[in-house]
Length: 180
Length: 386
Image (cartoon, rainbow over all chains, first blue to last red):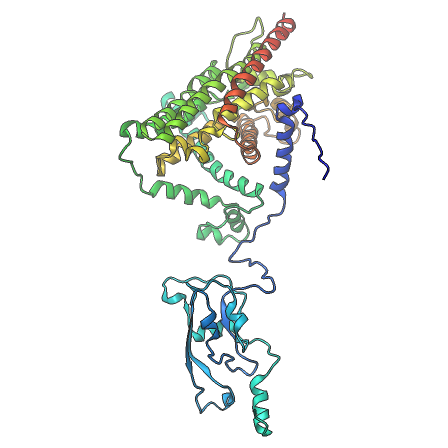
């Protein structure tokens, strides 16, 4: 690479008085004084959330309104700060619409004081049941308030579109007698 | 119409006038701290403080929202906070001088106003009567003498705080104030050399300086800022240094001195230092405008008398002394506030000079420049006014 020797010129008289630079600086700041403001006024104005944003982890339901989580506990195992606690449970026999679902969680707690928003739970989930969605601010007055329980997680998560319809396929397969 | 006022004993009248001026200066100083925050925000592309609002003002449909966005109620919120929070007195300070320092800061800051005329009117004979608390003949001397007392508050505060950073800050403050006082005084001298022409009555008052800037003719109507640009420039730079404003606020320099001489202060005593600083700025801007900016004349080459005559063509009451007085005060206050905006604008533009640079500029650049400037004008004025 060619070495370019930069000639260091001594400052001219005007430069040594600082005055042209000061005038230039004043011009720049005055432009900003009258320019439109660049900040958001937060609680009223919210920033646009980019695609793939990792916000508060949530549980989602399938388009039929059923829990997708089967309490396999993979997320609990992978969670680096051990923020997730799952109590596994069977599907109650009296719920006809969930008859072909394997299992469901009895309790599902995410301690948001521990969560590091890494997204490993979403990555590891075989049922596509847990997603880090757009909510970015999470606050509370007590430690207990900062633990998201199952109903709260479903409330935050809502329903996301699902391409697989796993339980519908399983039900159809059983009805046609070719269950695996 | 106002005869009843002149029948009141002189002492009470002067007290009333003094109170009236303080009632204007104090809120302006408070509003300046708000304006400082707003200007800072706007220059940094932020909207600035705009949340606090008094409920019954918020009910006014458009204007209330405007006031809220302008942040005027934050002044009250700030002032109320400063007034009511605990006024702690650290255990390690020299209590008497610690309490004395903010008072000593306030007194000269508000006293200098006495010598500054802030408006004028014409009496029956068409003679210009300046408006001021005491428009006496030694105006400039009085301002210099009293305003330099402000340095004692910095010294007292720094020394009484009994801690390192305040002490260093106060040493810096006193050295800086003394250094720039010299150039400031020398920069002003040509103006008074010019005003005190041979054969006229000698004066150091501001009213005559403004009268000189409101004569007719090209040279007569010229403000001294154009006639003596170097003087005006030196005075302005020295004014920045005297008021401890950026880029000369090495006295405060949070990064190396925490908060300098007011590090140990809190609550209202701390607030007093700032009111004093802003009062200094207001009075300093006023003096600059009187000396170099034409005082209460609206525009260069357009004197107050010309403006009043022009307004008289379509306003029947334009020649009433009351109207002229209010008009001149409004023009003068407008100029002073513009200057204060300039102070803030510069503050958010320039970085702070290092302390050795401050001393170098003061002693090695400004002082020789002001002496050369004085010599030049002394010779020039001697030749012109022979």
